[in-house]
Length: 280
Image (cartoon, rainbow, N blue to C red):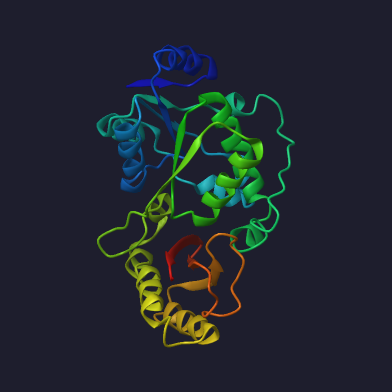
């Protein structure tokens, strides 16, 4: 595995592969890798000739600077995991490589970024669009792999690629969970033992909501989720929304004839965790 830190080094490596007609696959990450990330890398390696993984904690997508400061950074361990997973090129740039100039671009995603994470984290998805578009320009992959845990982000990236008419296929990959159901996240490493013990209630509640969707109204389902998350006192619900899985807009009723996704954000102390599950 090659480890490169500059755009120049990366571009010197990749054209040699592309010229041979090989498919370049790309997995963008912010590091602090776990099995969820590695499942993306392994699928990328299986489906592509060359697997490129970036490790870059993007400052423009953090509307909370304290969140940026405490985000885990484990580059040495990450590169070891990537090598074991079959990664061909690890791209670990600093901020000046990604943003040689101040990125003042703004993106309009219509209603996609006006709800849930977009509503509660102003500017977050604009920062995501900045870094993803920059990375796709630098790496120029034929396929890019993203996990469904960040369900709204995946919708934003898909729309970004469409609007910019980028020649890349966005590949959706399923959520990877811990044995107790907790969706894998780099933020899980920041949980105290007590918070970690409480956190699986998020997934349990979502799965229970799936079982109750036929017997409860939408307000009743929302109340069920709120009560379940509050039970135990260690978790605080930020939001629970049932949305159209294509438009991300909240549904008016569980009877609406559209694909529906249940999305949730929960605080464990200062650590914010998200998850989602398909309802119908």
